[in-house]
Amino acid sequence: MHARCLKGELLTQRIGRTPLLRLERLPRRSGVGPDVQVLGKAEWFNPGGSVKDRAALRIVEDARREGRLRPGMTLLDATSGNTGIAYAMIGAAWGFPVTLVVPASIGDERRRILQAYGAHLIFSDPYEGTDGAIRMARELAAREPDRYFYADQYSNPSNWLAHYEGTGVEILEQTAGEVTHLVAGLGTTGTMMGTGRRLKEANPDVVLVGVQPDDAFHGLEGLKHLPTAMVPAIYDPSLVDRMELVNTDEAFAMARQLAREEGLFVGPSAAAAIVSAIRVARELRSGVVVAILPDSGVKYLSTQLWQ
Ligand SMILES: Cc1ncc(COP(=O)(O)O)c(C=O)c1O
Image 1 (spheres, rainbow, N blue to C red):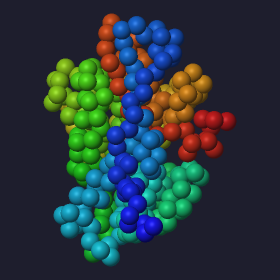
Image 2 (cartoon, helix red, strand yellow):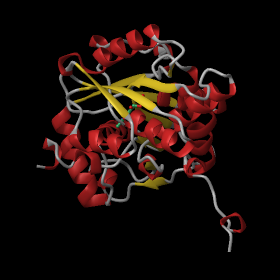
Image 3 (cartoon, rainbow, N blue to C red):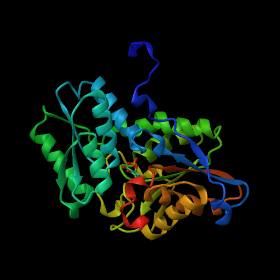
Image 4 (tube, helix red, strand yellow):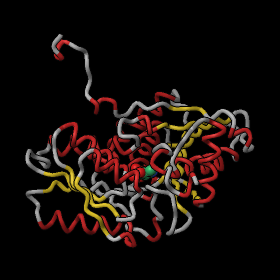
């Protein structure tokens, strides 16, 4: 039979509509009351393995439609990993080249995954972190504007719109509108800005809880320590009702606990979101606390987290 006769779907159609999983044991053991649910949005179910598939897809779709990413052009961005993996996957699936500026300190797993998808990597100063990568990507884009489509996830509204029209709507549907709290880590802040805006529109009483590392030097990959980092242009601090600071060791301990006690093998930023969700949930008599779990633990196997 010819392939055209078979039912098939595009890889990118698998992005979004991720499961919302209820934590069964950990909340009660941590002193959360019986009328409070803690739910995790399992973003590693996206084909590229993280929440960033959503933003990358929307950024590419919008840029192609608006003629900013034209045939022959290369997508360029600065990324610490997950957005890069998403761009590289979509680029390979749709047939456009992808160049990424990544800090030279990038984990082994991430580098190898990016190279497997065929992305071209440019390494920036590891001591300058993602901010150094952003500066280098800006310079490259300014030098060759016809060659590169500079996706600029930190300033691009398509980033948060992906969550406004995707993640936020899904959470409202999956909780039948009963969500009371959203807990999300802040990196580019796209997840919080988009999901938060949609939830607030549906119910202004929904409490938006942002999660940040408690120190500039941290192991919570994907999250920014905003007081010392370049603040993303898409970030509106007035949207966030409450800020939780999480220590790296505390998040790592939670990641190990989630794997053993809930069967949830998550990355450090997801664990930090659950640390914060439990803090919030403990204070409530009743409520539905939704935490965004950006990725799984697989890419962190070689880090201190699992040693
Ligand atoms: C593992 C991980 N967690 C959290 C985030 C933060 O998400 P956002 O950029 O939407 O704020 C990212 C972003 O790259 C990430 O890779």
